[in-house]
Amino acid sequence: MPYIKQNMRDKYDPLITLALDTDRLGGYYAVGELNYFISKLIVRMWNDSPSYQKANDIIGALECVKQEFYRKQVAPYEEKKIKENGNI
Image (cartoon, rainbow, N blue to C red):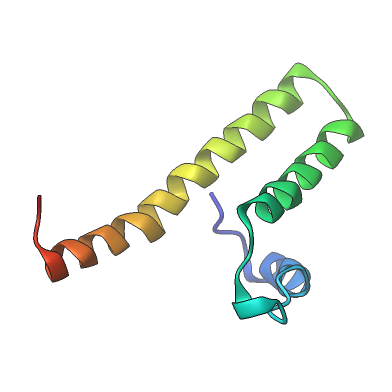
């Protein structure tokens, strides 16, 4: 779960802000850049101590990130669009 304590959020949020510097053209981030950023993080974690357990933990975390993003961000957006445009 991404719901970590505030002191941990305070530690990571400035790094996230720095990584997502919005001085880019229109503030748009290419999906390739997101993929690179995530890949670099997990490869560094993996290289620190490779094992089956570590692979399982990383893959599990990625799957949970995907599901949580859909649940908290995409599903509410879709519900909003259904209200605006009607259901199928």
